[in-house]
Amino acid sequence: MLYGLFLIVPTIATVVLSFTDWKGAGDSPSFNGFAEYTRILADDGFQSAFVNSLIYIALGGVGTFVLAFLFTMVLRDMRGNKIIRAILFFPNIVAPVALGMFFGIVYRYQPGRQGLANFLLESVGLKAAKFLDADVVTWVVLGSIIWASSGFYITILMAAVDRIPPYLYEDASIAGASPWQKFRNITLPLTWDVVGIAGVLWTINAVKIFELVFVMAGSGTYAPPIHSWTLGIFVFDRSFGDTPAYGTACACAVVMILLVSVFVVALRRLLRREAIQF
Image (tube, rainbow, N blue to C red):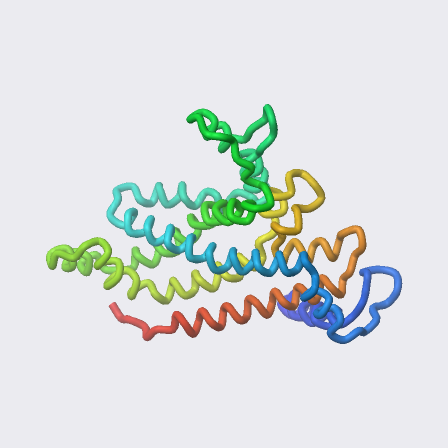
């Protein structure tokens, strides 16, 4: 009952409202077919948000999992790996708003009030950079997201690696296998089911990215510039901006649901493997 009341009913209401023209208050919603979907497809803000969301899903996922696997390979045989694992997980217990404020300070570019990144650049004789400028802000945000998210997936993958019997690695070492061969022939096949679940979790979380980008790229203003938007920020702007358009916001929300569904189904099919018993 709770699931239906707080998830299914609002989802159905969102889909219905996406076919209406409504400002969220005052006049009742008026049905206008697919006009809201046509409107968002021609909207510069939606186009930027959609491309950025795809970048965060695809490139962010690749970067996060490459980093997670590298740490997994190193930490498996390291003494005190559980302590290091806890340290790497720490960014995930910090609110995304706080992380956004932190990165905003680190990358700040203001005469006389440079952030930590520019302070380090200038200390070695390099020129200060505008990290949050229009041309590079998406990539700076991408790197920040990878840094903030990798600890969570390192923890998941390490938990899967802990299930693997140590004698498999010992036999591989006796046979002269390199660390890469151990990873390719033991670690990856025996954690493949967990990798698939982690990929689905990443896709869902990447589509919903909001607070970190909003605070980090916004520089204290109402909202970040359009070129740095995500789909979540587009929905927020159309819901609570100067001219609310709930129909448009709901249409974008439906697109987010469809995007997640497509990626999740594709991932499940791509990562489908027979279970390996060990």
